[in-house]
Length: 159
Image (cartoon, rainbow, N blue to C red; front, side, top):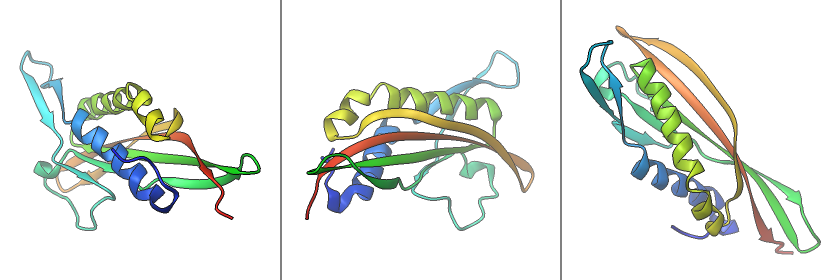
């Protein structure tokens, strides 16, 4: 974990979220088609953006996409600026129940890590939005869940 610096704000925030999610959100267990057999679903890859290649094999999924953070500078005090930031995490699966479970696990992972994020300068972390979608692929449906977190960080002005 690296403290956030103004010259590497995007990379450091992205890596912080990616490291946390890759270590904490790896698998979920679902009830396989209503029978008593439990099935473990394991994330196949963690990405910074959805692949440009078409992923038409069920074995490519689930995929977690930790998108680059958005930042916006705002006046805070005469000597400090406040950065209003957001980051969206997407999960793509081939099973709707696993999509929902991964969504819950992502939320829980960030929620329970607020103290660690705060120590790095990522403060006031809140779930700002979540949504669901699906897309038809070659012979299956990709279920997509998204969570957007907002947060703030502060920097001394460099003028």
